[in-house]
Length: 173
Image 1 (tube, helix red, strand yellow):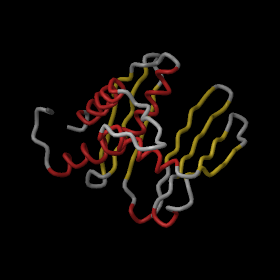
Image 2 (cartoon, one colour):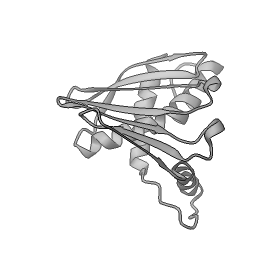
Image 3 (tube, helix red, strand yellow):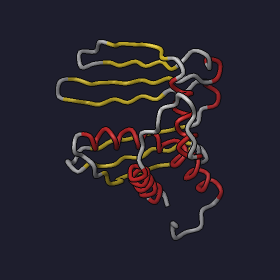
């Protein structure tokens, strides 16, 4: 697939980090950008470190803007946080998602949204992480769990996301 033999570290990085973790961030970013007509992203840089358990990548949009995504395994922190920041002329919009993980599994997902004026809104939502996992399970197995939502990602979006991540990973070879 890559034209070179991958050692265990690089193979694990591609499967676990790029396709297992970064794919969720890339799907979110690509979906947001496609909704405003910026559907083409081209990989421009990528880097792996921490024995293949951390990676970052940058891509350029059709209008010249860039986006970056980083994921790293940090088992000592016992928490999981995703942060998305958009920069605009009138300020930034920031979304922080902290799903239940480790010692906080029963708490629900915390969402923090910061608007252009820097005003933050924070809330906890029950079972959103579980609902995402059930929807993913149903999509993979072809089943429908009672009361579950349907996964929003399309096959075409999945192919698009895998293509950009594969292109990023190739930049490490």
